[in-house]
Image (cartoon, rainbow, N blue to C red):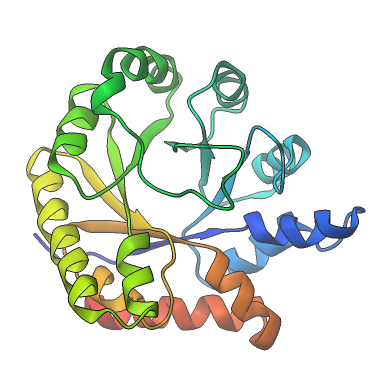
Amino acid sequence: MSAEQLRLGVNIDHVATVRNARGGAYPDPIRAAKIAEQAGADGITAHLREDRRHITDADIDGLMAALSVPLNFEMAATDEMQKIALRHKPHAVCIVPEKREERTTEGGLEVAREENRLAHFIAPLREVGCRVSIFIAADQRQIEAAHRIGAQVIELHTGAYCDAHAEGDYAARDRELEALREMSAFAHSLGLEVHAGHGLTYETVQPIAAFPEVRELNIGHFLIGEAIFMGLEPAVRQMRRLMDEARA
C-alpha cells in the first residue's frame, strides 16, 4: 500500500486533568485543541469518562462547536455514553474499556466475549454517521471479533510496547513491536482501518509510524507533559515531524 501521510490525533484529556485539580476554567482544553490543530494535528481526541475525572460534558459541547478538524470521542460502551454520542454525532467514536479504579486505560477492549452486545451497541452509532473504532490489543482473536461486529476501525493499544521500552526490556519491546506489526497487517487485510496509540513518545513513535497499514496515531499524555517544558505547539510540531520522517 502507498505511504500516505499518517494522521495525528492529539488527546487533550490531561489539559482538563490540570484544570480540574483546582477547579475553575483554566487551562481550557478547547484552547489546547485549537493550538494543537494549528500545530498540525489532524484531529482531536477526548475521552468522556463515567466519573468525569477530566473531560466534562461541557468540554464535549465546546469541542463540537469550536473544532474544524474531526473529533474522536472516546467512551465506554454504556447507555449514557451512547446517548451522548448519538446527540453530538462526532466524526468518530472509539469504544474503550473503562474501570473506575484505573489511572489510565489499562488494556484493550474484550470484544470476543461480548460480540453480540457490542454489535448492537455500535449499530446506532454507525447509522447516524459516526466512524466506529474499537480500542484493542494486538490480538488476532479480538481483531476478528471487531471485524465481525461491524467496526470500521481498530486502534491498537501500544502501551505494552512503550512500557517495555521505558523499562529497558528491549527483548520484550521488540516482541510487542512485532506483534503490533503483524496485527496491523492482518487487520488491514480484513478491510479495517488501523490506528494506534497509548503511551507513545518521541522515542517510541517512529517504529509504529513506519507501519504502512497504520493511518492514524492518537497521542495525548506525553504531548501535554512536554508542553509544560516547551509549549504545546512546538511539542505537537515535533511529533508531527517525527511521524512524517518515519513515513517517508
